[in-house]
Amino acid sequence: DQQVKQNSPSLSVQEGRISILNCDYTNSMFDYFLWYKKYPAEGPTFLISISSIKDKNEDGRFTVFLNKSAKHLSLHIVPSQPGDSAVYFCAASEKGRDDKIIFGKGTRLHILP
Amino acid sequence: ETGVTQTPRHLVMGMTNKKSLKCEQHLGHNAMYWYKQSAKKPLELMFVYNFKEQTENNSVPSRFSPECPNSSHLFLHLHTLQPEDSALYLCASSQDMRGANEKLFFGSGTQLSVL
Image 1 (cartoon, rainbow over the protein chains, first blue to last red):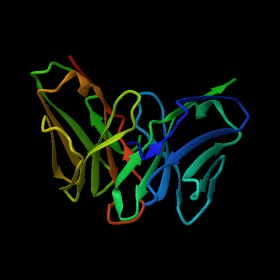
Image 2 (image 1 turned 180 degrees about the horizontal axis):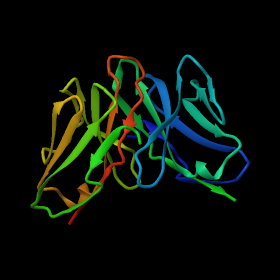
Image 3 (image 1 turned 90 degrees about the vertical axis):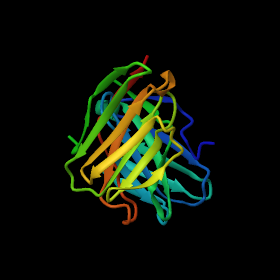
């Protein structure tokens, strides 16, 4: 049973527009959420995170929103750039279990010229 | 360059072979991890080591055997694998599991094919 779900395997967005990647989770004990980005032939790299005490965290073009009541988070990228084309993984960890980060399946983002 | 180096990048092995994957981190971290990424599946945590001690074994078959001789090196010994074990094996490290909300730093992975 997947605790972290990314229901869209892929997403295509025009360059310059906003990319919105979604993630749902089922475990109410999760208190920290992360987004990782992965290019082909490379390992995932950390992008942005949010603690459950916040509902928004912004870092440049990247903003993560957390809706705890809906157990939903989203990553907004604006404006989208060609270099943003990658697979994006949503991940979560439980309070006191920082050694066990649970990942979603990932969403492949294509930025169209 | 993330500071986590994995070798080899690609590995093809038969079901009767014995091989080892190697991971080295140059970040001074205390925790190291093995993850498995199969096609169309989430990254699956396999093993966790903190200060060289194994703290997590996520129900991994015994044909996968980890070894952590020191905080900078992690191995995954492979023996009599099955074709379904073909996947991308990712090593990661983090500063310290005792701290809250540690970020993982991943290597580039070893793409394993079992014939």
